[in-house]
Image (cartoon, rainbow, N blue to C red; front, side, top):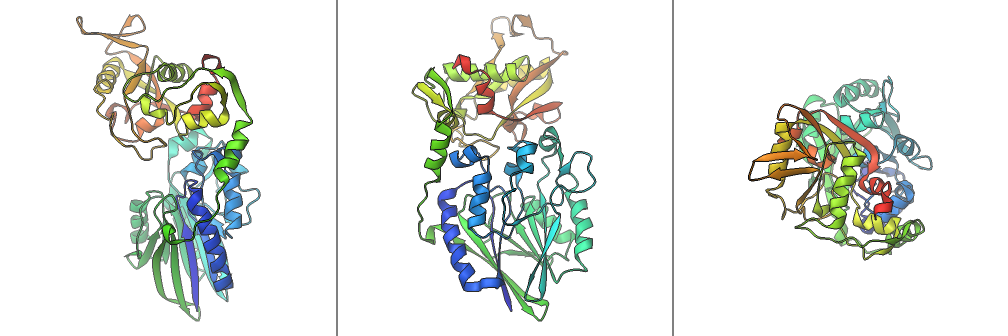
Length: 439
């Protein structure tokens, strides 16, 4: 007997591709009937899409229902771009099981979702277990805990082992953690891997464990074939199917989301918003101030590439603001010494990343652009730095209001070990709404 497992991951609301998968999966359901399972491995939701923004992800759940999803887990986009209340009710109308072994309320002893689920196909019992990436400080800011994923996985694997014939891991931990999982837990038969946007054309086998992954943005849908003799797994194979080879389908979800968001008028007569990458505009200067004020910091820091699309002025709606700032980015307040603040200021003014194409980190634009800094100045003739009108003291602690995306990577090494407070769940466009009178 053969069982087909179809899997998607990191769709990121690329609904133009996902609607193709809906039709494909429904056709396959007719072909394989009860010998088929479809699972999604998280980050289906991405609030950069108007339909997802307007429905706060519930529209994505409807699409998963329509595609016949059987089991799903959450990625960081479900987990940290929604409030705790919104995530808690995201799947209220789901026709599928949602599992995650390591997401729990702060201080809770059990996970919020079921840690695993068992599906039975013609007498073969398949156990599905899931875990999501440990973006601990972001989850803690939303009153969730996600750390110790491997310990929670080990606990529930021990529960599963005696109950099932096959174990399938839905992992939104990333490729390198999945390789460690395979080496540490050879009792897992299949790891469906995600988060790091990688793909395996025909799977990868590590320590006897098959890893399968389907890229990002609906580039691929994965197909795994499990072959059984009686209840014993005797073969497992993986392949990918490119969405470009699937028949195009009608996709009106962007316009549906636009219509919903356009109903919310934020301001009748708003100033134009320029998309100016290599110098500060009225709006980006204002945004740097907004971030400083919102975080109650001494200095504000952003970059010009945040303006993804210009706004011509006039009636500003939720949709037009969403087009300007589609990013899944939050503000962060960072404590730095005066010396570090000066280093950050000098580094920012080199504009070393101004031409870089940026992918991920919550950024949903393209070119990075230049940095814009609020409330700090430099008198070159005196080699003196000021915050407001006060000379910066090298040993004093100051606060910088900036973007969480700068704390992930290589831009400012000073941020790595500094004390940080992530201000969740407001995204940039939510913050801007607090200052609507300036627009």
